[in-house]
Image (tube, rainbow, N blue to C red; front, side, top):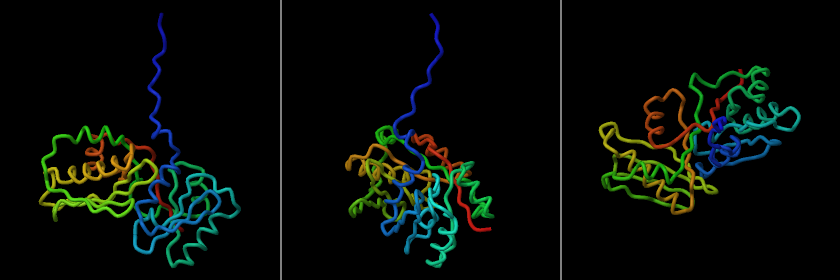
Length: 228
């Protein structure tokens, strides 16, 4: 008796739609203001300069008439340039491109990566004690290894997001970044989170290699567009 091999079913986190995964990321910016535009989300922040905090999340059909005009009006009213986050090759990307929008920068696509917290923490076992401390405020945490490394995390509905993992140049490749990540994931696990995510540019080879070793896999890729 023979049969055709059946590939393993993707994990629950891999089956989450891209737009839903992105919504978890709203928690990373404490002052993020959001407003619906049909099924799109207008995002803005007075303190964060990151594009994902100051762009329209347009990864599904908007479901309203003339959504691009509304996007432009909204961000101009804030004094900000209109920017859209779209999935590469999507109908939404084509909608903006047909309206004359262009890539917002020369950056590579952004990769939204996810991992099992339990698996990643197993891979991080055996790290030396580098004196990492945690500062927690509600659903946000900052981990620091003195002045050598730091990172930020936010909890949202069983997911924990990582951003701003920074290591002093003279301390790189000594485990400081890993120790910060481990501390943040431990905090997330205590909150009940099972999935970790982060975002990285697709041409950042060293970071991608590191995250791959920690069990992170690309959930989806997206790009930013701006008015031409």
